Image (cartoon, rainbow, N blue to C red; front, side, top):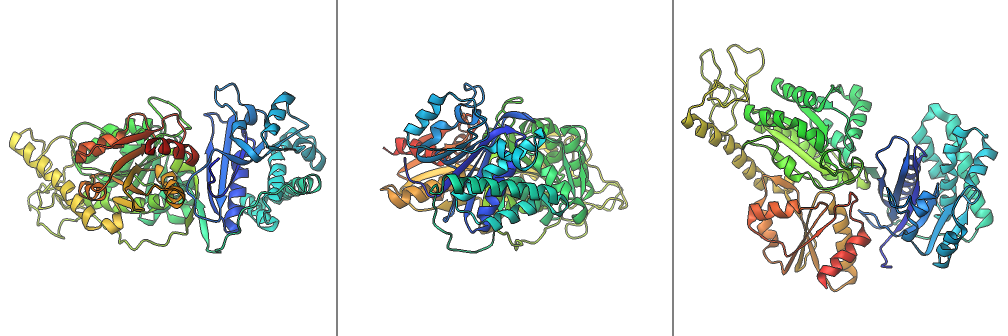
Length: 602
């Protein structure tokens, strides 16, 4: 097995058994102890039941991806070990290697003894931990209490990982809050029992990792949370959302803080209602945000085109999952790039940005509202479930040194007509027409039909050409601004230097950076990573500059048809030499991508 930095801990069981809570508590404990943490979850499309598992990888060095080889596995059921025949999972026993530790309930399992013997022969250390019995002894025979056996497993893991118990207790207290002291006490009792059981029965069972050298304060967050933080920082006042995995947690986050920040949060009856409310808010002058996924975005398509034609600002967060139709609603894929590039029919101005980690989601969210309002156009922030829900270690973000930019108002520039009709769509030098405050004297027409400068419907061919050119001037102006402010907007980012160029976008950023750190550190290969962050307008000049000296060009994508590869060819004429794609509904792991890249390089 290749030696990648850090330790990987995995918990598996049914949804509703505290899988998320256990992983979050462990992740935050490690973070507070000074480690870098990356954690990601996989779960079935069920409220309860099915197979869920959460990986927590940590290291004394920065890490941005997961590894499928598992150092410690906490199996809350047999399915975690052997699977269900492949219908939803093949289990995780093949992820264990010589030196791994398997923790399972030896009093409650229903596995053939031969399976455990085979696992043991591979050098896996098998730990029988009577989680059910400990819960019954400490609390009661109440079946509802058995959900807390995950805390016994956390305690056992704490001993093996040599965690600081006081830090762990503090995380548990913060997680449940001061109003639930009885639950806090019960969980800490079970943690102690699990810890003591391993200490008494397996005293030499330890997994070491270098102590962190820095006490710098960091945060643990995901893309969806930072989308809301960035939106609020930018002055967003109205959030409209119809719940759809994997965007739903944005609605949960914003509901928690709406009163503190004076926000209006609406959950109407459909995605169609969502986008029309948000466009209406933009028409009235408010900054409005929308969260959705591919199926919901498809329903919004017509209204997004209307916003482009009527020149109304709106910001949309499209968080992708595998399609088409309902597809795999709780899995991940970079399969919606073409959908967010081409919603509705015809050509109209819009901006599409594809962040690659939670810090970029934060920055891009802030910038998106400026662009939407200033250019009077839809702006789409696009990323996938992996980035939306995985937990990344980040530096606590500071306030961005970027001013909030408002729309051009009539009277600030470009004098308007004095007649009864206002020149809502004045053909200015940059294509950006001054807007009017609701309630002003005169008549202002906004329309999705083709129109003249006053908003009056027109099918005149010369007018059509004039207004198409007028709207396109906004895109040329935005492209120039993107280039002038490339240090702020970061449409293309470069990592490393080398003759082999890796191209990626979105959530593949983390695993590619980890791969660069690994290969550039131990192998003869020198790699350079080019991250594409803006996809409309596409940063053609910057991309060509970065890739012009490549001996070998390799693109990595989490989709079937190579959508970014096609877009690059369309926008630049540049062909990739190799393409590495994954489209099974799961993200790239570091060890799997390492093997696939070596196949290409060799």
